[in-house]
Length: 267
Image (cartoon, rainbow, N blue to C red; front, top):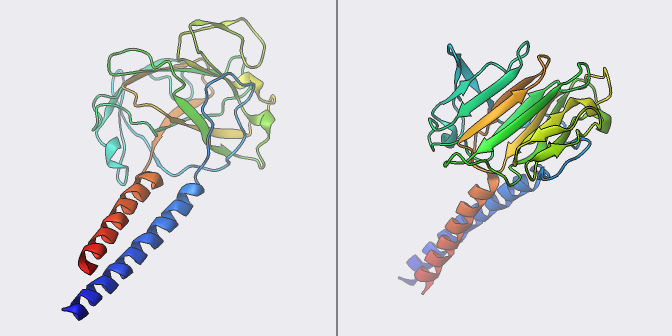
């Protein structure tokens, strides 16, 4: 009986070692993740790093008479399955105006936090290249806390990306008129919780930054986009796997359970 218990204990130790090694590896991956800044104030320019396309899957669009139906393909994370309704055509180049989004058709009934929002070619090549975003909760109330962080990725056609290549932003911590990050033009009216991204802070004609990726910090039920120029685009990107921190938490719990099991056997 003692030999059998010893064998079980050795097996448990091996299992724990394998689990611990996996946890360490996943923790290392998590440490390499982008330490993005919360966009909770105005800045003349967004940070110019990190450079590169973040992991994820672009949205699929099925055109309708009023906009499109959006969905993601496998291997998207399960929380992003389902579809949502977009009204308006302002996302794409050659169009400007307002888009509205209803995310209640997605699996969880909302657009989960951790979704990447991307805009392309927002610079000074035209007089008013800018974007405005506003998000709303399940009650239809605006999300007024800072709800974006980033950039979590910057795609460029020249390297390195300089600070002068990046657009600026305003976060409306109250409903008011705000000075543009570029400092030019009339004051812009913004509702509480809105973001305004200003291409006029970039170096004229450089056209370096082809994509800026931000990430949502809250679950969003509906959203509006206002795009003032036809030269740039907007899009969505979803993750493919659970966050490393979530996986680590599960494995740590399993490791603790294995330790408990070994102690029971040895007892």
